[in-house]
Image 1 (cartoon, rainbow over the protein chains, first blue to last red):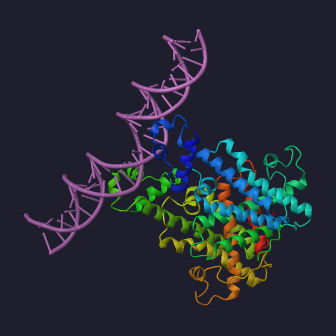
Image 2: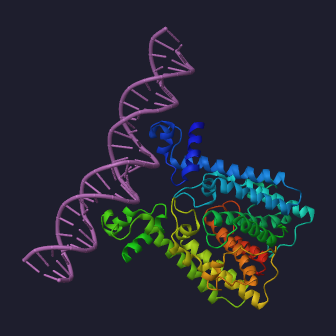
Length: 224
Length: 224
DNA sequence: CACATCAGAGAGCGGTGCTCTCGTTCGATT
DNA sequence: AATCGAACGAGAGCACCGCTCTCTGATGTG
């Protein structure tokens, strides 16, 4: 089973998710394609395993970057974003697998929710830290947060008891959406080729995009 | 040829790009699969045609929304973003086709550049209008725009002669990247299921995300 | 009328996911 | 120790895919 996953991971990294063929994996293992079905019920199930791996990988990358960086939450967010970008450029197919077009007819099982939420946890944690430290500027547009972010998500991320999400917490958590979107958006846009003939220095474009979006939620990032 | 494109479009809208099968299109037309190759050299070429159609469609949606909306550039941007989102939710597979994971081994030919740049044109136009009207706040982070945005892109969008892009224009154009990213990012995140169990009211999440990112570049959007 | 061009058909190649049946092997129970 | 059953793997086969090849027939033109 471990060998199977390793072979599938190798195939994914070299050929991409769309080309991940169960038969090819079987060939790499020196087995008949039918034998693989002893371990995995379908190709999509195999993909699910890789998806969970990818979510966990990006979650760990973000958590590590957040722990390693300096104290200022805004600069820490920049470092986290950079780390995630580096990971995505390194393993583009893993990024595509989780943040790109979902596989046709594929419905993510609940097993993927917990690892997927790790990144949200890092983001919300940074916003909380900024609020506590008094470095969180007033956000651009303010609005009523009731019912906007699911309390369940906050609870899964380990912040509060789902039944008692304070208005204060919700108001901050809402801003995490913009940070998350700017991160996924900036990487997607670069990775999927939409900066072709638009921007030259992709790393700089990324930094600026992250910093600008962060300014909107009240995090002042200074770029050198 | 027109029938072929129509059938392919229908297949795309019902099954998605990954499942767009030349044989299926041929069946829909009552032809042998080999006959289709009289008109189109390969499946990828057929996809390219649909990609160009999609870029043009989203470009027109954006241009129309920009023309119809009121005078305030910030509010107009919100309307443009909403219109593009509506289009994407309406034709998810077309959105995926251009802003999702690129098709394996597919390299976009230059024919796609011009339609792809229409959306950029709308964005830059709005920023210019805001700057002219004096409603463009100082952006979050400021930075040297030299060499950041390709002059060619500005020229293609119809703003300047590529050799003479003023520093003023470049400084404004740079901000368009954040708006573009927030738009594509917000739609991707929603369409690809990353708001599942995170946000309840997707339309509101979208508005807030767009407005917050816009605040970072200096556009004040007011949400009701 | 002869001829060339073109649209389409059909078979076939190697590939895919997946299912079914068949044999083997190996470990636990009696 | 013998036996039984579960687990594992192989192989054939189904329907589908992109794509190529050859062949047929219609069509229009010199």
